[in-house]
Amino acid sequence: MAYQLKDLVNLERYPIDDLEGAGAALLQSCQDSLADGAMCHLSDFVKPEALAVIQAETNARRDRTYWMEVERRAYSWRNPDDYPQGHPVTLTTPNSIGTITQDCFPKQGAFVSIFEQPALTEFVRRCLSLDSLHPVACPYLAANVKVMSEGCRHAWHFDQNDGAVTLMIQSAAAGGHFEYVPYLRAEDDENYAEVGRLLSGEERPMQRADLADGSFCLFKGRRSIHRVSQVTQGSPDRLLAVFSYHHIPGHQYKESTVRSVLGRLPETYPNPA
Image 1 (spheres, rainbow, N blue to C red):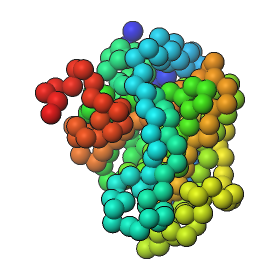
Image 2: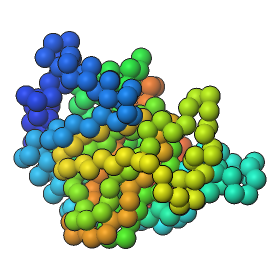
Image 3: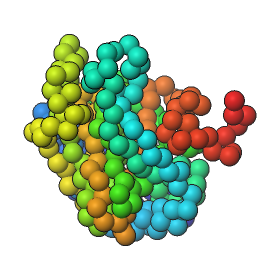
Image 4: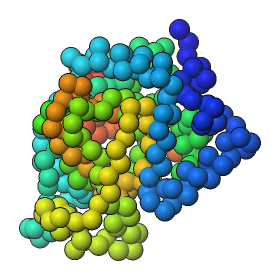
């Protein structure tokens, strides 16, 4: 079955195929939400019947999950050796999570199809106010699913990209909440003191977005620290799709990026070093 946009997205509520007309107010609302609070949360974005297919596609591939358990730094792109011990850049929090890569899914299935919809890419581009945006071409990480079973958690971190794009496929039975502090750091102020308190375990003000199944989210994570709290009860487990984009068409991730996300390179990775 070849899926079309109307088969996947609730266009009556979210007319992302008509951003100059019926979807103009939606676009403005999303841009405002991102500017004010770093997040745009669209509940029931995916049609129930399409979501059921995506859930089935994902759960059928659970045995192909790449599991990783590490201590993660919030500033993964910075060298901790350049900072004194105890500096926020050197601090870590537990990170236990699994990934199902895009190559595991059928190319004509609902999961891959929704990611590859041109109208969705254009909607994301307009929401993030970017000049250009294209789906990443990496066969493994372009569209992947983060798996969190009981005991899993996603560490506090900042993103390196302009905006994170996710789809909640399945919520955990308990726990697994998305928690964040919007715009904790600024372009001209790292706010290390406050970041350090948070990473050291102090109780600090934060927000929680309880994302229901089928919720589509845009999040400004480059300056907004965020995590997923521990899943305290699985079955069902937490399944979150991550969609990746780049301003250059056909962008491929480096081998080191694939390895760092999955913990190792896939067996099908071409000529691994």
